[in-house]
Amino acid sequence: MVTSGHGAATCAVVVLRSGVVKLVVQVKLLPTPVQASALEATLRACNRAATHASTIAFNRGLRDRNGLQKQVYADLKAAFGLSAQPAVRAVKKVVDAYATLRANLRAGNLGPPTSRRYRKALSTPIVFRPEAAQPFDDRCLSWQHDARTVSIWTVDGRMKGIRYTGHPDQLKTLVQYRRGESDLIQRGGKWFLIATCEIPDAEMREPADWIGVDRGIANLATTSDGTNYQGRRLSRYRRWQARIRAELQKKKTRSARRRLSRRKCKEQRHATHVNHVISKGIVSVAQRTGRGIAVEALDGIRERVRLRRDQRGTLSSWPFHQLGQHLAYKARRAGVPFLEVDPAYTSQRCPRCGHTERANRPTRDRFCCRRCGLAGPADVVAGVNVRDRARSVWVFVTMPVPPPV
Image (cartoon, rainbow, N blue to C red; front, side):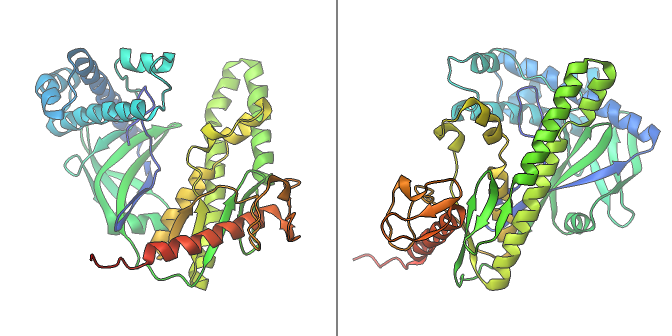
């Protein structure tokens, strides 16, 4: 969970692993002015040290943690005022950032090798922003859950009694399941700690049936039961935010830039909240009725779909992947089976007779089979097709393997 100049991953992600849901919990720190000054000096010193180590690693071709630590450990302590363990964490942050960069290059996330972005990533060392997240392990940071305070190492010495707050459910999760290091981050003048919690999976039960979920733009999610979570309000909110941003950008004043900075990420947080509400509702229905949840596997859809220029912004801001992530981890925490199925022709296939034709969907909202005449809302029909495919996939997955002959 490191933020670097090359866009390595930030916070608030959920990682699914066999037997464990790795959940990121964020709490807000409430430091005094003296404590806040010490935290800011610490964050800046750690990131200056990381940038220095990154330059050494780039110039000398060092990618392993032990080799880089031998080269920069003494310098990080003497020149940047870091103690032993923060210096080790800074080295690890650099090594992780370069590993993330190599993974992004291999995956093509920075374009082809001939692109300008790809060449720039290879030709310059990673630079860490002054306010980039800094990891602290249990030697540098300790939690006092009863008092709701933390004790953290700073360049001005150990700071004790820094208060924190958060949602009661998150605080309870933090006490029970926190594992490993925590990240200190400054965002919008406020201080946060981001901790990783490893929550054991709930016992998975055999589903009585499936709920098919069709994700879209006009309708964010439509289930095979006919429940429709419309996206009109989110679309209006995005247009309103875009209009305000355009008006402020035209002014080009210091006050306008400050307002733009305060509004940064507001739209993203709103979309995340909407996805949480939708996924929570779908998972609760599945849990209550003893069914599983099935969605379309939409990986790579932005590369496969060609759109008009006026549609590209809408697709780029479409939070379908995040909705799938929320459904997946909430389902695992509730013990609800979750499947991703083949998305091919789910909106053109008739669930009754199986006839598949583009003409079956004459408009965006309407489905009418040209063979048997089945008609209904197109998104509901797609959800039914997703549900039917989940039934077939589950039978195949749970089929016992015959013994070898």
